[in-house]
Length: 269
Image (cartoon, rainbow, N blue to C red):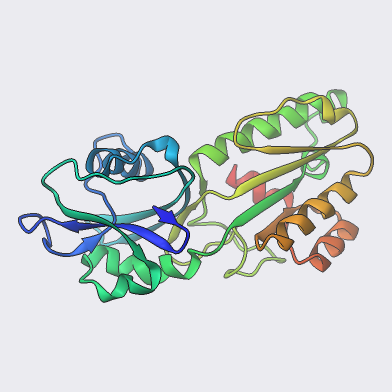
């Protein structure tokens, strides 16, 4: 869990595996659990961190073949007062990012830390040009523009909750591997960006799914996409715009955003 420039770390009990070292609260996942589900459960069991008080952003996996160590980084979105709930911890402490490596770290966490640290200050936003994405698939969307937009919104809402599987994302001709949330950053297996979806015209009748900011353009959808990208970039966010519109692509790149095409997004969804 990250709170500003601090990370919640656990001083592992001496009797545990690599006892006496520091890492994030965690443990083995149960049968049928995803790494995120296991991380949320362990944080609640070991540190009294409620799931509602955090929002995941990134996950990294160090794969050793017979086993893997996954680190999930989440933002504290509410006040967190960690409590030592079991004998697996000697101490729970908020540690400043610059002081993490001064502690004796658990080997799995130490291996993941360089990649984790490199992206801790990144806040990623994906702005979706819904009209362009919907129009990229000839599935009869023109007969029900609001319904087609709603299907896209529902897919994005599901992805916003479970995160994007970015481990094997194919290269996009307008993407830099070290910059886009849709890129295959080495070691990162999953990402939870903030989503903004721009609707226009008849598609504005679509509803508001959870986990997604819906912008309903009263006029030009392109202008609303550019404005959303500009606001996010001005706020210090790393912005990726999803569109195949060449003119719009140039405008949002001028606004500081990266661009991927609709096929990259639909492949991930």
